[in-house]
Every structure is written in C-alpha cells, then in structure tokens.
Length: 499
Ligand code: ADP
Image 1: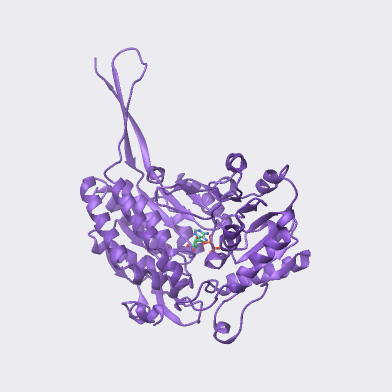
Image 2: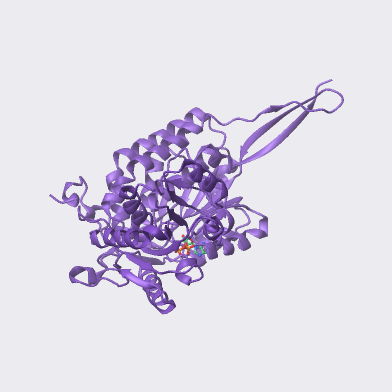
C-alpha cells in the first residue's frame, strides 16, 4: 500500500480544482476584484485549486479587520487562560489532522510526504509551545535610584497588528511558527502566504476558527508578493512585519516599512558552511553533509551548501557524499519511497539549472547531478538531480550565492589556520556545521562562527524551544524559544510616586 493510500483523507477532497477563498474577518470571501491565480502541483503540473488573489484593497480590508480585533481587545484582553485554551485546541487540531495538512503541502510545493508528515512532532510541538507561553508572560518590577519614593514596573504589551509574510519551502511550519508566537503575545495577524503554496495557510486559518479564535484575529490573504505583500509591508496600520524569505525581498520590506517605522523581524537567506575534519565520525558525516544540503531539494534557508573538507579525506569523502546523492529516490512526493521531490516552480528550476551552467563555466567539476531529470513521469515536474560540485574555490559564485536547490559546493582545506575566516567570508550568517571528535575545536568554532545556529556533529536540528535566526544579511530577530514571543511585545515602563 502506498503512503497516499494509507492516508485517511483522499487528496482530491481538498485539492479539487475549486476556488479557495481568502480569510478576512472570520469569513472566507472572494477578492474584491474577483481575481484568482492557479495553484499547481510541481511534481505533475496538475491543477490543485484556483486561489483568491488579494491586492491592496483586500489587504486594506484584512488590516482593518485585524485592527478592530486588536483595538477592541477581543484577543489581547482575553484572559491568558482562555487564549491558551483556544491555542491548545488549535494544537489538538493540528495533531489530529496533521496528515491532511502534510498532504496538502506535498501537493502544493512538492516536498515528499516522508518529510511533510515527518514534521508532525515539530508542528504540534510549536503550537503547544506557544499555547503554553500564553499564561507565562509577565512584566517586572524594578528598583530605581531616584531620590524620593517611586515604584517602577513594566507592562509587556502586544505590539498590535502583525503582518506575517511567509515563503513556500515549509508552509505549514512557517504558518504555525509565526502565527503561534504572535497570537501567544496577544497580537492580531494578517498573513500573506507565498503564491507557490497558499493552501495550508487557508486550512490552518479555518482550524484556528474551529478552535474558537475570534473573527478578525487571524486573516489570511493569498496574493503576489509585489502586490499584496508590498501593500502589507507599507500599510500604515500594521505595527510589525514578521518576514521569512529572500534577502532581496527582506530589504524591500524594510524600505517599505519605513513609512510608519514598523517593527520588523527578518529571517532571510543563507550560504551556510559545513566543515568536515578528518577526525570526524565519517559514517555519520557523509549522510549528514549530504542531507544538510539535499533535504527538501535544497530549499532550506539554513542548508549546509558550502562543504569544506579536510584535504586528507577530501577525494574519498566528497565522492561518498555524491554517491549518497545518487542513491536518493526522487519522484512524486506522494509516493512512500520518495526521498526528494521536485523544486517548487519553473522559476526555481531555471534558477537551479542556471547555477549548473555557472558552476561548470567557473571551472568546478560536476561530481554528480548537474542536470534536470526528465525520465518518464519526471518530465512533467520540476525535478533536478542532487548535485555535488567539487574543486570549488571560495570566490566562485556557486560558493557565494544562495542557490536554493540540492547543490553542494565542495571545497578542500589544509590545516585550520584560516578556516574560520573563510567560513565567515559570506554576507550571510544563518547556520553552520562542524564535524569533529575534538571538543576544543568544536567550542572554538561555535564561538568564532558568525551565524545564528551552529550544529556540531549534526545539522539543521530545530526545536520549538530553541531560538533560530540570522546574523548579518540573514536577518534579525529570533524565532523559536521564549524570546520569539517577546519579539511581539512592547515594553512599557510605569512610574508611580508613592510618597
Ligand atoms: P523566494 O525567492 O524564495 O520565493 P521571496 O522573498 O520572493 O522568496 O518570497 C517570500 C515571501 O515574500 C512570499 O510570500 C512572497 O510573495 C513575498 N514577497 C515577495 N516580494 C515581496 C515584496 N516586494 N513585498 C512583500 N512581500 C513580498
């Protein structure tokens, strides 16, 4: 029996080619202009749905709804216990209906079921984590040194209306991450999903209503980035933007947000170094280094794509990573065996295959992959082979640019003198990996590397309680952990003269 057959819900029941409407003020409605765009399965080209396409007018309506919902206190002044009850019910729904959520992401953006279903623990864990924090938020009392009697304390208050703009590479996780934290803080939300993957955002919006979330507290407006996304980023009634996506779009959002000086958190791109020393446990390091870059067909912002390998083991190690890539089963993500699905779109396919050409032209050696896959049914989708470039030099574009495809640029190193400087020689700073048995080297590296996450003898581990985010042009603000909810809080200091 295939995994698809084992799913309790037939895929056709919620990706039926019908119109999926946007969520504004507790209602699923058409765009004011009546526009829709097509959502297609990147593995087959099949039409999944027509999605209501929001523009500036729809964003205005959604923001007005979120503003009303914030200002009248229906969420922000609801007792923490009651907010927690609703968010816990939402977590229960995510748990009981996760198959449906995962399947919809697989259809919409191609990631295989093994991965989308595998995100269940994280998705439910995040929803529970933010529900739990709802009753744990608090201000503080502070001893001041002012002559006389003054009592000072802080109120930690929700920032207001949050515009959440999310990408397509892990849609349901991105939704729960951003919306969970904003709701936990007491904010209201207008979320714009990526045009490549809007369907789970609409499903999760429906689940929030079912859990008892009051109308208008979360609004979901699908649409184009440069239209609906830009309208949200520049909207004068939005207090904060929480964005995940490319660095260029992050910069555009920052500029757009200047009008009313919105608070902005940005989780952007990466070109993360992954360093393998000869003393590493190679049985772990080979699959670890391969999947650090190949998982989700490389469409992971913290992917370990710059693979630095000790020259003494370089040839053998890199060949083993390439062999691991060749052994991965690539196909429609609904098949149980599939380990890697397609990339998300024609644009993404063009981008990745463009880098195959760039790498070759720069003189890198294609050890494996480097081609689009077109055998049989794969021709209908956007499939590329896991690729290892060897003999890469630091200055090559394939070693510097974020490709966002399953592409490893393998670079040899001799000794460790300038290794950290080379690893840090990037405009990004999202993730970094190190494989070694030397504990001193591991600690030195963890301290010296300029990135928001460091993985030693593992890669890309994530947990709801652990912060994640960028240094340098990978952005700022942290998602995950208690600090994440604090990103959505303003601190007010209160002074009371008591004598
Ligand atoms: P990618 O290149 O991975 O698609 P983007 O940064 O373009 O990443 O997209 C991430 C999210 O940002 C998507 O929801 C997209 O629609 C949105 N977006 C794109 N351009 C803009 C923009 N100018 N203003 C606001 N949001 C945008």
